[in-house]
Image (cartoon, rainbow, N blue to C red; front, side):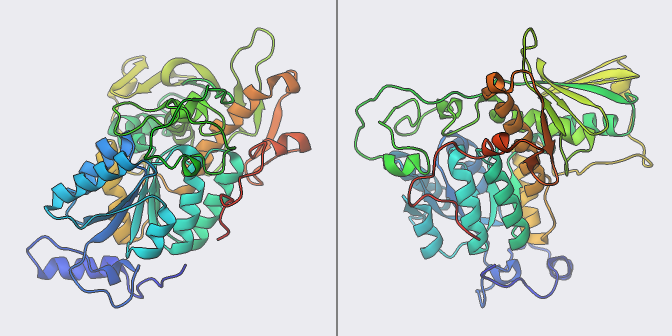
Length: 438
């Protein structure tokens, strides 16, 4: 890391200060460890990168209200979105101080910040995270963590080495409903788990959208980033502030389809319930013949099937449990009426409430330096499950029904050199958009 960390614990600082003050506390930046000789009474200085719908309508309005945070800069390649983000921040603070950037690397170089919130399209996530590691900035990064397996391993290793605090935006872990469901599974209330059904969308497809005329105000070359140069399409980057999630996620160059979009939520809960946060499946069975959906096999024999009802269904020897947002059902129904006792396994409890609690959990961990609810390894291994599924779908014809053996420790396919090439993009990254070396 480029900056040193404070030599004494933040917990000690917070405990001592809280005991002596009865007013809301603002954390000095030198205690946060991201600047030397910083003035006291300074909040966590945050920059927001990617001012699309998720950042503009969800994250940004909440960050500007958090007492521990001050948003000091925004960044987007679209002029209208960038200016709208700055306006939202300036109005919240009743000033004109927020700085606006086209290139986030200029932001990192010029702004004195402590942390980053990233909600760019998926194909930019890895570069932003790696640059955050180089700069020693904590980061909240939207899910899915990366756009391929090589990127996932790279950011996992870099974040661990840099010791920044990274929260991956799989916010279902901050929802009490999902946590309780996973605690029921982990404590054996369903007996031995035999199978898990994960209902999310399918894989992406190569981009073949027709060319459109582009209005001024968008740095299209920078929006494409590492992806191949192609003509502009409003499907990929709708101009200005829009009220929908753009469809770039449906195309291989920029996203992973429904498998990574919703899979980063639901496969994440499957892994949590199975106790596989630090591992993953060891075999992936591609579709073949009448079998349309892939199957993951874990070392203990548990099967995870991509398919079924939207959400996650755990099937055990003593019952079934279905969980989704706002839904929790079991067979028999007495299972979901059982309390988790003090002697049973209790999973990480964030402040709760989905997105809001997930953001609060990250900020708390930026201060405490503890690992958050969804740290880098969990996000990386969750997205690895999604990418493994996409590989099995997109290369099903070549696999001809033969399963892929995956080593979650080595992060590689066992005995399959051709499959190991599929872990990265099938094309070289464009010059200037290579993965940063940390």
